[in-house]
Image (tube, rainbow, N blue to C red; front, top):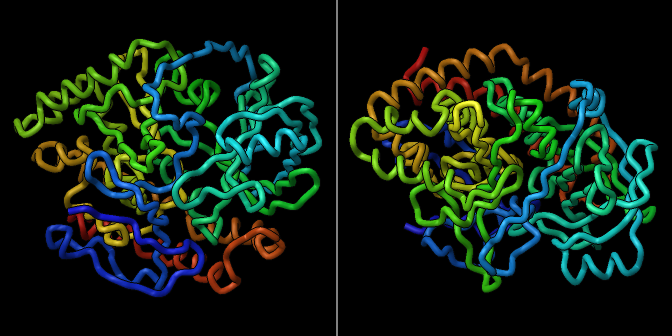
Length: 453
C-alpha cells in the first residue's frame, strides 16, 4: 500500500490523532495522541519509482538533480594534524553563534536560478572572516525555502580556497527548523544516537544574517566530512556514501536501499571511487541471506551488526520516521578500512519524535531491508532486543529533561525574535510540550514493545 506523508503545511496544520497498535503486530508503538499536530512533510505530488512512500525534504545535499547518471568526482584532501578538541567549544549544544553571509547580486540571482549550485560569497563566523566561501541552499520536499524566506544553507569554506577550513571543518550545515518549531528535535535526537555509540553529528545553534538581513535562529549540524570520520574512526580513509533519496526532474524519486537494484545511485562523498562495488557487495550478501534463518550470521560478514542494532534502536526511540528503518532515507554508509564492514550513520533528524503511524508506517514491519531481514530472523531479533535494553539503560543516564530545559533557555529569546519563523507562539509551545512528553514516556513505550525490563 502506498503510504504518503500528509499534504499539510508544516507549521499550521489541523489536529489529528491516532494509534499505531494495529499496524505493529498488536504491539503499541506509542501512537497516543500526537498532541493534535502531524508535522509530516508536504506531499510533493511526485511518484516514487519504487512505488513506496513519499520521502521527506531532508536530503538536499545533492546539488545535481539532473537525472544524469551519477559519476562521482572525489577530491582527496589532507586535513593535517589538528588538536582533537579544536572545535569542542564551537559545538557546545546550547551555544548560539553568529554566522553572517555576504552575497553579491550575481550570487543571489544564481541561487534563485539554481539553488543547489555553489555561488561565491563571504562569511564571518563568530567574528572570524572568510573572504571567499561557497554558499548554496539545501532542502527539498517540505523544508526547501527560497532565499527570500528562511532556507536551509550550506557554507563551504574550501569551495573556492583550497584547504581553507573553519576549526578543521570543510563546511557548516545550517538547518532552518521549519519542520520543528521547538528547535529541540535534532539536538536531542543526535545526543541519543551518540550516546549509544553510533557515529553521529554534534549540534549547536546560530543566528544567521545574509547581507545584513536577519534570517533568525538555525540549528547547526556537524557535517559528515573527513574531519567527522577522523573523530569516529581510527582509519578515516574509507568510503562514505549518501543514502538519501534521489529526486528526478519529473518529480519522481527513488528511495535507496541495499538489494533493491539501485546500488549505483548511492553517491560517494568521501574516499575512492570503486564503482560502488562495496555497496554492491553488501547488497549481494543481503539478497543471499534473506529468509534463510541465518540473516545476521551472513550479514555480519559485511555489516557491523553491533552498530546496526544500536542505530535501529536509536531510530525507534527517537521516532525517526524519515530514517533508514522506516523510510530508507537520510543515512550515510561508511566502510571502515580496518575490517571492510559497512556502518550506517544517521543524518537529518528534523522528522524525529514522530509516531510511525503519522506517516502510515509500522515498527512491526520496517521497510529497510536490513531491519526487515533482522525482524524475520529469531537470533537477530534477540540481538536487537538486547540493543534496545542497552539503549534504555543509556537514555536513563542522559538527563534528557535537563538537556531539554537547557536548550529551551538558550533558544526562547532567539525563537521569539526570529523574523522568518513560520510557527506561531502556540505551535512553538505545542512542539516543546510534545518533545518533553516524548522524553517522559518513550522509554516505557519501547520497553513494553520489546518486552524488556
